[in-house]
Image 1 (cartoon, rainbow, N blue to C red):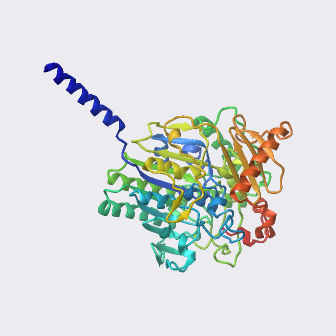
Image 2 (image 1 turned 120 degrees about the vertical axis):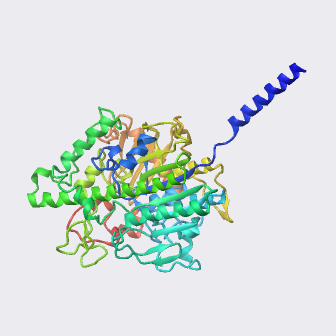
Image 3 (image 1 turned 45 degrees about the vertical axis):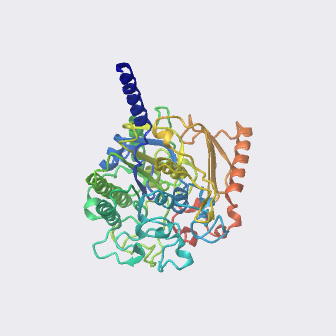
Length: 552
């Protein structure tokens, strides 16, 4: 009997141990934070001398990705992120124009499903805050209008607050709460408003839906133009960039190497050829450029302050340990120059100071080049400066890495399959009677666990700028330009073009890109109505008239 009792006891212990080891961890809450036009080096933990203590703390307690990608511009990136598809597959091959449906349309296509729609089906409570910009938001938000099908409330979010795109930070329009248009009010500042609404939604979640996991997609417009910030935030940085963009690039690059983001043998490319040397500028111009960068830094600082308030709200819910927080940017810093005065939406009122409500200044090429350190090119290009984004991932209960880097290549199309895996569900073939395009991304869960994911192919196209990455090799071309070939394992900053020396590899990769382009619905830029406008290749040149192609 004693022997039998001992056997039963050992069996029970073994069964309990097995049960505990196979019991799935609780599904995490997810906070996905997206910045707008943030450069690769614009955070403290990626090389900048800008105060981002809350994001730096997330990085110190989690993972920083060094080879993560977006889709080069706001609308395409948001469409890809939300659906797990390449932008053309999702219906947003350019911006929001019905040029050549289904790949160039006014918003997300019928053949797509969003992260929020799928997570809500599994029991998540879902919240969207800030910039939407994938269609369905405008003056009429009623659900009976066909264009409203892509309103966030109709795309899986239980609550929504924000605007379609960007605009004046002190008077953002249209502005909505759920389905109701609202006025910004006299004390409004967009970055603070988005942060405060994030806190409100979390507090309401804790009061009414605490038993459910939540997915919050918090989309700031900062630091997208116009350069608008609060006076106190600007004052923190005024005079701190008088050394200029040349020195700033060198300082950021040195800091990145010190942090371990790039090997010591990485080379910093020369200054963008469209930019003058800082020493050659008149003193009055230098003062104005210092102010612009001070405002840019202030906008990022304010965003970080708001993120801190949102994270504190998560802590008050006692949910910090099992909340997956991710932060990234929708594209590289922007080299655009847009001033269409007397158009108040895109015009700088003469005499107004940069940073104030009536101003409309942009970062332009010199500072964008510094913000994207150490990469070449900018927003809208498919060189690394346009598509590389910082990605910070923190999840105390699920990511054991602390302050580590991940060099696994990833893309915003990977976020949807990652979240679905963590939520214990899969991507369907159909959703509510609609046949879906198969998901293009792959889960990042192995990367979060420190495991290699294996080689893959990634591809891009925007306004004729195009690229394909296969393993460590990247083939890239600017609009109407020749293909360039780079070995990113040795040349992440795209300095040593190997196309002439390895023509067969370049030819094979070009064929791979064309196969991908045909599959996802890319059309040659010259065949689209946008070709009658100036392509992004000339956006940075000052003094030229603004055209419809330059609308956000």
